[in-house]
Figure 1 (cartoon, each protein chain N blue to C red):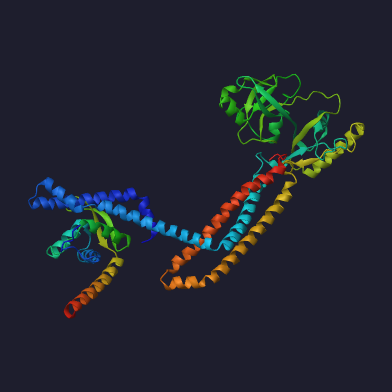
Figure 2: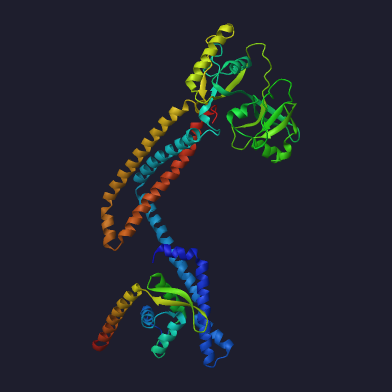
Length: 426
Length: 111
């Protein structure tokens, strides 16, 4: 009888029990008829019939439980035997587990980072056309530094590669008005920011174009997290006035939970009001743009470089060697980690392969050494299938231990991999 | 439980059930006990407590097939019938029974 049959019985135990009940009551009814025919009273007959049936149900339950208990016990025995065998050879066990743990741990750690950074798509439609635009000039010193309002207005007026072009600048707010004051991370964005990214609000609306002109009522779009946490996901929050850094802002919309740009912690987006600049500075803006269809990053870069050269000529005292670098959004987010990550994952894959082949040859060597033991066990009646099962159990126990240690290593490894990238956006 | 003389020898129950089903076709459990009792003139009595476990075991081993049906008295009963595998098992059990009785009777004659 197959063990799956027993498990199947266990699984449909209700059905089986019902069948047994029905069968039993039929049998008892027939017996009662017979006893009554032979002159017994109905009551007496029923009692006798039931007594004859005895404790069949109880017996049956016990048999079934035993069947399963035996199977489980024999698996447990295999595991105990495997553990004993591994304990007897601590050197072998230690080496195999360590090698497996290193291989598995390194792979798990690197893959979890690769998955988060490289494999998950950016949560915007057609993300390949999203680019970021920066400033780079000698005084600032950064390869991809922030721009000033004048730069941004020049880009907007004179670049021709973009379908939408917006600026973002980080803000930290103290949020007050109904409830406790709390510090939240905000992002100032120009009015068409959400259109450029191609995302829609969960509730309410995003900024209307022109809302970033000076003199308009300040408005704010909340993150889903903030909306849920502070306003209990109440749609009535739309239209309400909250205070950010003591200034009143009208809540106009809520973004969906998955939406994120830049720092994950951003919980409010406000309109960046771009006052007409009187000088070139301060530098705090980053450009986010969607390339026109058919325009590549190189083409956009060339256009922005030409523009930078003109600005440089117009403002020689503000800039030296001005450039407006354009880079794909994904590349900016992932940064130089990308190549490093691919190399790293290739390397750890090789480590795993080496680990596996090492463990395999260790096992092989051990198997040769155990031929005697196996021959003896075969000759005293161990089934071939049982021996195979036992050896498999041994390998399984070994790999489970290796895996467990590996995952623990990975948890530590992921933290280690993340640490130097705390500045990176993902 | 005290053993009475007409307790069925361990292992022969399957043989009795298989033989009954082979000669009488489709039967329910109660019918099997009555048949065995009447044919053996009450020399053998099948305990319900062992018959049904044996039937279920035989079903799981694929010797018998079971299904619900209605008796002449319009009662629902579980009917058992022999499978081809059960038929082969019957031949094997008959052979081993013959060997056993042969062996036992030889011993009784010469020992």
